[in-house]
Image 1: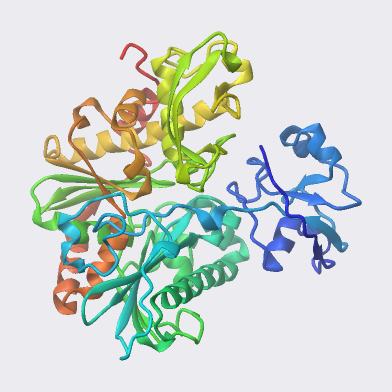
Image 2 (image 1 turned 180 degrees about the vertical axis):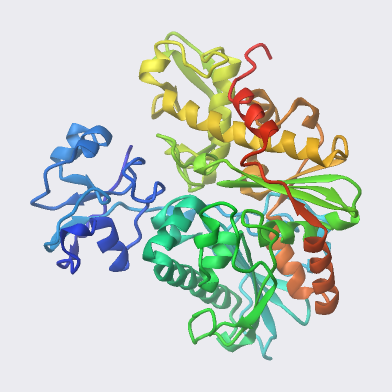
Amino acid sequence: MNVQYAKEVTELPAGSGGKAETLMMRLIRAGYYVDAPCGGKGTCGRCRVRFVSDAPQPTANERRLLTAEERSSGVRLACEVRVAEACSLQLPVSREQEIDVLVTADAAEGENVGQTAGAIPGERDCAAMHSREGATKMRGQSRKKRCGAAVDIGTTTLAATLYDLTEKKRLAAASSVNHQRAYGADVLSRIQAANEGAAEELRLSICRDIDALLAGLVADAGIPDDAVEELVIVGNTTMCHLLRGLSCAGLGAAPFTPEDLSLWEGSGAELALSDRWSVSVTILPGISAFVGADIVAGIYALEMDRKKNALLLDIGTNGEMAAGGADGFLVTSAAAGPVFEGGNISCGVAGVPGAVTSLVLERDPAAIGGIRTVELSTIAGETPIGLCGTGIIDAVGEAVRLGLIDENGTFEEPWFTDGMPVAEGRFRFRQEDVRQVQMGKAAIRAGIETLLAEYGGGDPEEILIAGGFGCRMDEEQTIRIGLFPEQFRGHITMIGNSALAGAQRYLLDDRTAAKQRLASITGHAQELSLAMHPKFNELYLDEMFFDTDR
């Protein structure tokens, strides 16, 4: 892993918890962000720090995950180090604040700021992926505006938009990393951390992120803080529980019982937001422990409750799905893990500049490792630094197409030993990475097949793929690796950030009618549990394989 360390030195004072506390927890408590997708379990190797002097002896885990050069230069894993003394560190230069987050589902890039939100259901252009730096600045307003903000709390990232409530026009957009990621990349890691005593730290972390997003929005729009009167929030059930300070004990073990799934209304003060914001807050309702307000918001925004037979897929660390229409919904979720967001992949990265989003490979005996990169696209057109979710799908798809892996997902030599070179050898996609993709894609595909079989409505008339992953996804590659079935070909629509679109629509719709529709959606939704479903378990094993004859 190519890691750049800051030139400045961070002086960390002596810890108060003795050697029982890891360096990672000391850094978090001191206000430093630590990238730890595995939640500090010592498996991902991402929480690298460099000791300026007196580096402790490396652990067995560090000898496995760090190169000899890294170890000799003082690099250690923050989750492995347990030193109570003061220490001088160089922290990694993080680009996660530059994550390319999907902030809209309602218009094309450059056209969405200042447009009415009424077009949300009919506009599904995924090009509008940008941060607040690209938003139009509304300066020099002569009258006070009545404004509201919509926030989508994702497990990895947050996205927010600011609207003029009178004219129903969007004024600004902002995005950021979810700093709860320091406690793990997936919801199960967050649940475990909360249940083991970190619930308050997790709550304060997300509140700080929301505060920062609101500050960015008002700065870009050139409005005073008190112009923001309303805040509408969506997220999966775990994110909403952590924000509200609800116990996650019921989310961590069967029968997976949430504390509260209802629509919540309160104030910013009740959520422990900064007193800078005097806002009324609404958190939209969820359906179950693992089908949350984000899916409900998507159904609401896309008017799926007025359709006949549609399928909504939001593929992330927790692949949430809804099948149905005006007669009701069958919903479920499949734990794909963080693989489709770059987690648990040796060369995986989040959607930051330089992340590879698509690629085409070919065999070439004269090239590095016998593989040449024919085509390659990266976020912001920067030098390749690793693979994000869609790049990971393409890497496996190309390995299948070129016959580098067999139906079991096993690389041929020399790629089994050395890995498959990508971007002319800048990094390699390895055997253990293929296994991670196999588990993730098998969970999603088995979930889709089980859901559609139980719903019994036949092939869906519309297949709607939500989120940033869907917007850059190559349909052919997803079918090639078996993530989606063959019958989906030509019927997929990329819809952008449907969760944020739902929060925006609620912000601007007639409130009484909006509440009635949300109540109808949740009231006519039935959850399908996959955990012990015999068809899901059978399909999961089958979908681990690849169709190498395609």
